[in-house]
Image (cartoon, rainbow, N blue to C red):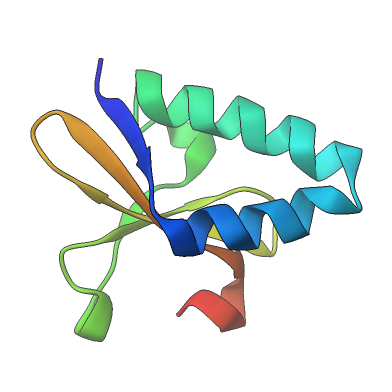
Length: 88
């Protein structure tokens, strides 16, 4: 099972998101567990990114919130989190 590595930027933004919403907090916990178990679980809608974000992936947290991450052989680097238009 790969390890999760939370970049400082990801930590700061995720704290802001969950501060005002216990629903987002619970959903984030669930999605991070799913990512660690299988980053390509169909429920996550994981897809490879293009352009400046090439070599990275995105998955859905909610219909509008996305998590941007990079995969290495044994680690999932969580890079960014936010609304669709903010992270792309």
